[in-house]
Length: 122
Image (cartoon, rainbow, N blue to C red):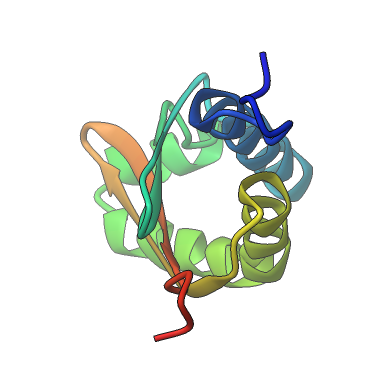
């Protein structure tokens, strides 16, 4: 249900952002995360993704090559940056001021953080 002014609710925006991020990750890496949770507030949008690593990446982690996996993930995040920011802007109706992204391999969690430009322009 939309809010009284016809704009999507925070919950609707969060769900749309989660779906967009999962879709983009699948498009870029060939496999999307199995779980995504998005938190929206007035200054930041945080997307927590679980079970993100590819089978090949898990094999490298098991072989002690976590740094190689983290480097590759940073490259994916850099390649996806513009599309992720565009999706968040579209679904939130806000301008993204900064995008930050990081991964952990144990547990297999990624976080995408979108710092929003203040509404008053400051």
